[in-house]
Length: 497
Image (spheres, rainbow, N blue to C red):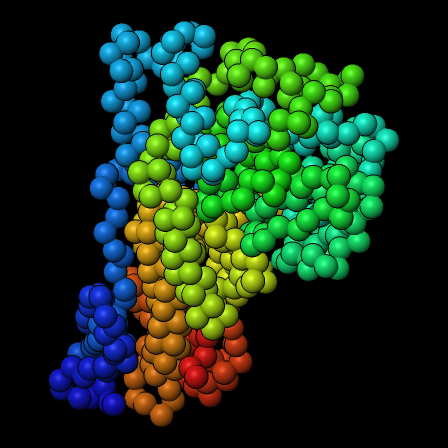
């Protein structure tokens, strides 16, 4: 093409094929005029519309975000609205739940219904006690050995992540714990084969963390203690009530409520009744299961409003058809997200072994870690928040608990696809564009500042810097153009395939 041409020329860029359920969104301005060093008319570069998948319908409340936090986490919108409607005057009582006496008939009805609904959800037998406590699951790291064994008793721990490791370390203060398997060497990306476990024959219990919130590994089945008199203990904080569980396989199940069933401040313990009443003498009264069981979780003032909120969530889960139906929804959400990661050709990566990937917490990284902060920032602009991974591992993490609607996951995966496509399109077209305008075989002469201005105007310069890649091919093209000015700048671009 020659700048002596009297008419504006147009360079058509690649058009992506439309996909089902998408709309045409212009990836670049329809016309990009590049000024020249002469008085002749500029070239007009027309970029055809690229197909970017649009997000599905979002929450019914336009001012709410999709909150992917690991905990405290998103709550069902209908539960929040019901709590809002009852906040000022609960059930005609003339007072808020936050004002009630925990021993009054009003709150007694709330906590009793919450327990009854939880028993219905998990099919909890009558020989198990349900306790609504405080202190988080972390407090149970001490309460478990204090209530279930003596200081010299052996107890076994399977450590599949950070929380299992913390539980083991706390147990060392009150018992003789043994780590019979640890995934630390593999960066907590797997769960052991149960038949390979070397359990202690005299262990009082076998402890697992059923779902590791930070690392995203989840037990799909549960091991049996080797000692016939031992019990299985599970921290289920981050997958509690996300699927049906056979409670009778466990001696103790404990969970913080703030991930799947309520706000922070409530800890739920499900314990076989014949295990209660054997606490070590040093056990603080607030950690003694016998005290709480005898007082129906009302030994002291409980987290009343938190228990009320848990009750609303339990009621909502029952209304959905119970945990069988809830699990179906959770599997569908997780499958969509994992499929998007796996289909990205390495652009997104999940480090967890596929067979033990969590349905609740999905950690993932980008092939270029320097893009992760940009991903998180841009997602927040689209009202998708708390996607930053745990500070101990980095990357990203999407927590998709029960209350995360399918629309939230669909919006996230649409954003992920758009993020990948937009970067790849930008990199490829920028590369071709720059090589074209400095090609020594043409008669065009452009100064770098004018090119730079145009690139900045369509937000490509930042992307070029972020992308990284191969510089040599671009630099070699510039070196051939002795009469063109590169001014020493070196922006690394992804070269054309």
